[in-house]
Image (cartoon, rainbow over all chains, first blue to last red):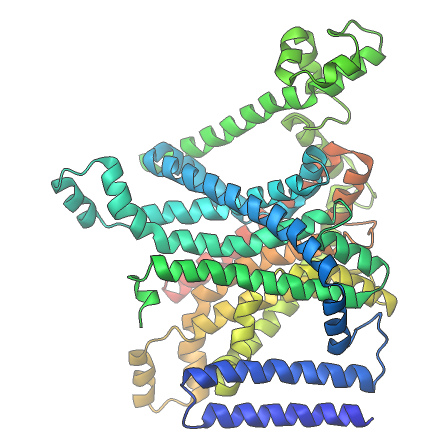
Amino acid sequence: MIPVLGAIGVWLLGWWLNGRLASGPYSDTRMVRFLAPLIFGLTVICIWELVVRGLEVPLVILPAPSVIWDRFWDSLPTLWLDFVQTIIKGALSGYVIGCGSAFLMAIAVDRWDFLRLGLLPVGNFVAALPIVGTAPILVMWFGFDWHSKAAVVVVMVFFPMLVNTVAGLREATAMQRDLMETYAATYWQSFLKLRLPAAMPFIFNGLKISTTLALIGAIVAEFFGSPTLGMGFRISTSVGQLSLDMVWAEIVVAALAGTAFYGLVAMIEKAVTFWHPSQRG
Amino acid sequence: MTSARIRAVWAVLTVVGVIVLFWYAASVPMNIKGVLTEFERAGEQVDPPKAVDRRNMSEFELIVDNPYAIDETWEQDRPRLPAPHQVAEELWDTTVEKKITSKRSLIYHSWVTLSATLLGFAIGTGLGILLAVGIVHSRVMDLSVMPWAIVSQTIPIIALAPMIIVVLYSVGIQGIIPKAIISAYLSFFPVVVGMVKGLRSPDAMQLDLLRTYNASRSQGFWKLRLPASMPYLFTSLKIGIAASLVGAIVGELPTGAVAGLGARLLAGSYYGQTVQIWSALFAAAILAACLVGLLGLIERSVLKRMGIAQ
């Protein structure tokens, strides 16, 4: 019982602390903005640990954070191999191919009005569909290894990226385009100097959405068949063996990878679109 | 219809037509090897006659050498890539021709998935809106919870799905609830993030105006913040329902569920029933399109009555 009471105590403490921080004089500083979510996260983890220990929740239902932590460090080599297989080989290569081809397609769509009229509604439609469902087909075509996962990722990221890039390429105003015309700029000059930079916020929006989609695609595709490594494979087999600490360790890896991937793209965005109002101030 | 409208419809039809044509064309090289193997087994003349010789030949060479086999590539039982009409036939067969109660009816399977999706979506959006209201009104919650809600958008949280199914199964909960939970948490975070943005969308001028009216906090919420959040809400609802559907489908994979669109996909991939996979995929696509379309219609009429949209 004592750990459970402790959990309630930790909860009250965390709440009180964040309450003080939020209503205190420094509530708008970066320090507090960083500390408050951290305290919240730590509180949740402490409560989790204490409740699991206090109520003696069996491992097969919910492992305690400390158990997950141990498992994470113990199986670091396995996790690293899974990470390479799923994220680097599957997700990243698919991401590059998918976003790259969508970008090229977007230039063509932007150039020919007929394509834009025809392809954009189709693209918008497809972007809302459950594309992960193509995974069994693509696994059948490209085999169990990472190629099929990359293919799923390509299909998943293509349309969101296409729609965003096309929207971005139309962002430059008529006035700005006219100005380029008065300079006698060629199509490619005005494309590279005006419309591509103007499209960057949209392109990065597409790239950011695609990071999460890429990870989802690569992991879920492994549920339909994979070699004996990979994060999706490890999750589904560990679930089958009821070793949930391993599943949670993989989820920690997925979370870290997802945040890092997104963060990286966001950082590049900040460097490229420093002029945009959303990045200033 | 205006001429611009007609042109747009033509453009879409052309693109769809090109896709279908391309699909038919792609079926030929994709299936030619399987077709020739079938022909060889049936004792017919195939060029080259041995499967071993054909293995390393390019598909296009085989087509040129065996042009009579092209028709058959669109009619195979278990093609690598079924032709569009085969998928359409299977869809028609398993929706209209079969009784709804039949285990082979796609309507039955779609309903199994749809019910979990809708239940989860209702729970997820309900809780999401509540949390968003809390975040907007409480500085503590804003500071401590909001960053996590944003971070959750960058994490493939769908990876939790198999575990949720199995853990709930081990404590005796199965059927619709585990799938609904997955759907719920997948739709929860987009709704929280979108709704917080929406509830914060009134500008300082509007908030000040209400203050000069001496409006209370709850009046400010009901008369300004909530109506102003509607466009944001509908945008995130559309994202949320698509995510819910994916969640319900993925939730059917790990236990080898017997019913639902995900189960059809999995069974199809185990037994190489490609036509079944494609028809399940199209059923899921149609379902998603209907759900998003329905939300779009509601959005249009709501925003129109509120005077936001034309």
